[in-house]
Length: 257
Image 1: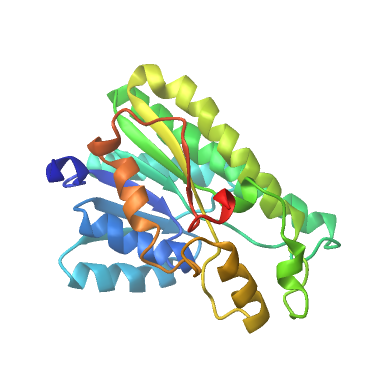
Image 2 (image 1 turned 180 degrees about the vertical axis):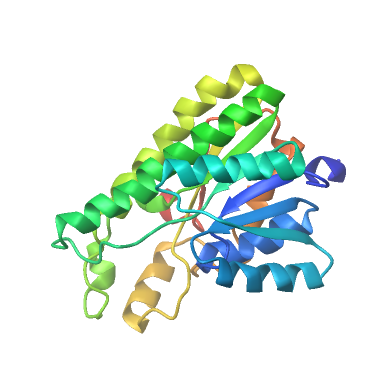
């Protein structure tokens, strides 16, 4: 049974990889045995992550990617296929946060949609089509519980955090249904598509926010960089071979309370 959770020799592409969620995902996926490709616009940061993981005996390479540019997405797919001859997994993790408040300029909303909505669609379609041709693969979208529920504005009262902007709620909510759409479209080709929706990640938030947030979870804490890797590795692996079209909350029970 443990072998079914292994990603040994699987070629997995992860967008992002140096941020809050991404760094932990790199460690978990690489430790599970994957040949991991991490891609983003900031290759210098990714190179430092790859060097750390390769020093542990893992297999991590870096690639340049502008997720909102179709030419860049297709070029990344083609380079991965040329190098490895296949792609077994895709983790849509990268996110851009140009919109800082509800009254931010429309241009910030449009840039968010270009990268986070259109970009996720481009990555899913391009790499999903390659998986369909080989008749196997798994795509995991990194959503958010904020794609499932509205904002709890009381958490932010008395802090300097401000009101969260609407773009994140919009494209993370859309990601959940995009997951279902491609699960239906790709299922006949033995390609699975799932979403995980993490809760809040500890990043030294102000104390009023922390105490209020933690009291809303069943486990009494925010997420850390070890919490998301296990569910993602599971969904990439053969252990989840009959799981597709699902949205898995990884939020300490926040949305169940």
